[in-house]
Image 1 (cartoon, one colour):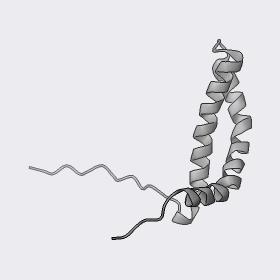
Image 2 (cartoon, one colour; image 1 turned 135 degrees about the vertical axis):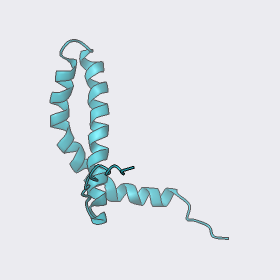
Image 3 (cartoon, one colour; image 1 turned 90 degrees about the vertical axis):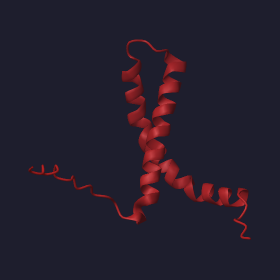
Image 4 (tube, one colour; image 1 turned 90 degrees about the horizontal axis):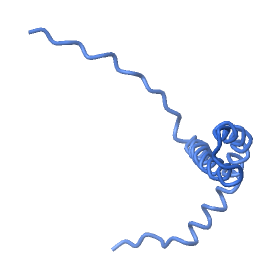
Length: 91
């Protein structure tokens, strides 16, 4: 019997670990902005035929602000978490 060749593996490029804070901020702001745009648009304008178009317009405007906002408040949030969470106790 002849073995079938496996399909060529896909090369996946990844960013170096030093970019983790930026990538985290990007994904966090992207998802939170989407959720907030969906909710706020539904509450203020209803869910009519133009709902998704209105959400998209709001998202395009809000996403850059949210991304910069997450980057700006990240150090403060890290400090607050440090003050809130107990240090690991070793036995």
